[in-house]
Picture 1 (cartoon, rainbow over the protein chains, first blue to last red):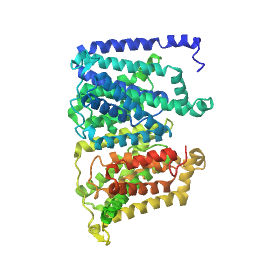
Picture 2 (spheres, rainbow over the protein chains, first blue to last red):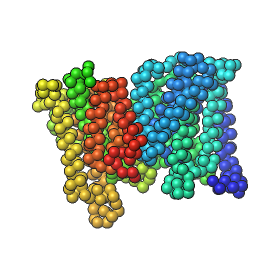
Picture 3 (cartoon, helix red, strand yellow):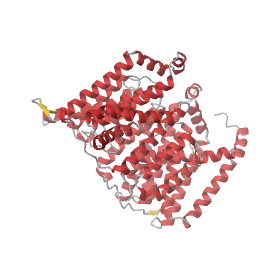
Picture 4 (cartoon, helix red, strand yellow):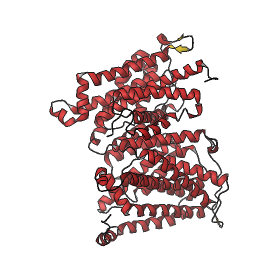
Length: 321
Length: 292
């Protein structure tokens, strides 16, 4: 952790200035966007963008491929919807409750999953997520195939009526930006540096005295929590929590978004999420072709385009984005 | 154990053994592929589904029955697999193994999407071969002939695979290449061809499983999608170190699942995942595996 000296600090500020510019551009676009584009579509994309950013924290910086992230998205969605609808929680309370539920699930599943690495880690997370899926199929509170419908959006902090689409949009935007900045901070913290060291060479990091398992578990829990934040917010946006959000296809989708945008890039997952959500929006009438297209993008990305959109752009500009 | 009839118990035990046969066949294929290629073949479920569809096509388009399918389908599905290996998987061996997982996942999406587009998600019927119709009354239960055949045939195929890999010269080359491909190549064995054939063989096992499954479960584009996740859990439980391990784990978990259906049906979908969690806590490398 000594690498965080003053010299490094200065070089860093200069080196990452372009990321601040990119961030400013992103915020500006997102503030103007709801006046041009349909807000519900944007809110959906923002929720998925946060979901993908949370996922990217794990794969891009920890080297851990989770194939079960839908369980956090879906669990938080169910918990948030239940709290808002049945217990009458205000929106901020319901979202916090949903996020906490995902965090708790993250601790339990994380403790199991980090016992293995690489391919096994992916298979274990997938299996655990499938277990959660069956749990939600059977448990009565989740409403089975119907899910939890007509969840009230409520009034934020007692005075902002979230049934107004624009108010809801800017609330979602604030949630997204808060999550994004938190991830940015984590990546650039000493914790993030150690995480990268573990990704590159775990035995060496251990021999340097870092407790790799604790770092991996914490990264897993942060990732799960933020995925939960995205899921809880999504449940309020669509006023619905359903089995779609816990199914393995959703876990695959977030992998796809991150891969397409660029694994281990800061802005890649956001771009990937917007591209995939847009694609699904336009291809819905084509039914199964959505799945086929998604599969084709997977294959193309892995074979020829491993840096992803933002990764390629950053490579071309010679600056990490 | 009062309140549970022996009929129900043995009935579920039989279903458990049938499911176990498919778990064993598929996890064996995954283990063989993983051993040499270090890739987890996510397409395995889709290839199992292709096996069942291939049998259906042979019957409806060419009039070739079950026994021909049992012979031809593994060859066809295996050949398609080898093509995939040569064109797509080969460039990935130098990279992180996770890319192999992502690529095969994408392929599975493409294949399943195309079949669903063409055949919807309702199942197509496939008849039980006439020689295996009917069943035996064993006194305590009724045993349909076809189901008995599935268990015996898959057990035989699994054991034959084990024999080839563990007891023959060809198998010793394979095991040597798993340990140290560069050295085996230096001894004059064509390792890339061996890799292709191994992938083809693993996939052929999945295709064989698909033909066996066609008369029991209906032929359905998504028949492999959920199955493959359970098989992954089976693989984690058994560990991929040993061939016999994946056979034993496959059948064993099928039986455990069947018994759960009798004693606590609510947990029958999840019991394998719970077993996986327990095994991870006690023996993270899997029951038969070695940590690598």
